[in-house]
Image (cartoon, rainbow, N blue to C red; front, side, top):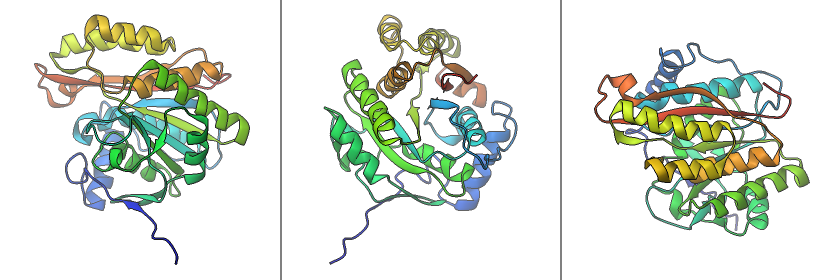
Length: 292
């Protein structure tokens, strides 16, 4: 008997982004052309240039963080389509494994389906001490899902997806996953981009959030996960995805990268005008060695 192909249905279509295809496309294009966005709709390069190891992207509702996230996908479009994109985010639901990867099948959004790279999933699990194939952690989680429509929009044939969510956001787990990702790149020659999904300070006044997040971003720019965690503890930075970001920073160091570049920072208050109670969002790029 032929097995049934698993399809992960969207959990936050209709809340974090529109459930209607046309409305979703219009909102993504609004994000790209917004005054806080890159200012133009990107055109994907027909040739692949491996200019970035990965990115940090926010994962709030598109009306709030979409223009900042658009900077990530504008940059990625210019580099052309990779074979796969690993999208790692925090686990907000508390369900599933401590470090969970969706095992296979497809992820569905209003823009269609994206294939999960089951071969890459298996290779990563084999090389990690902590990563487990698990569906439960992904059922209602938004941190990975909100990245997928952007990938579908910029690439007509989207790269395969590896969805990972962290319940355990310790530096040990982040370092382990970074080593596993680097191993599959080296041993199997996989062309992948790593997207760390995280928002920054939550529910502080705008000026306070900017100050806290600036300190966190300085550590990120230096590719220093230990310093990032020290800043988080010292200043009570309520960043929800430090584990995915630390993984990207460790991966960057393993590749010999020298710095990260902040493409855009803004808060929800910059979008709505309500600055007494904001969430911070950052788009960050980690250039590959030899690329600006």
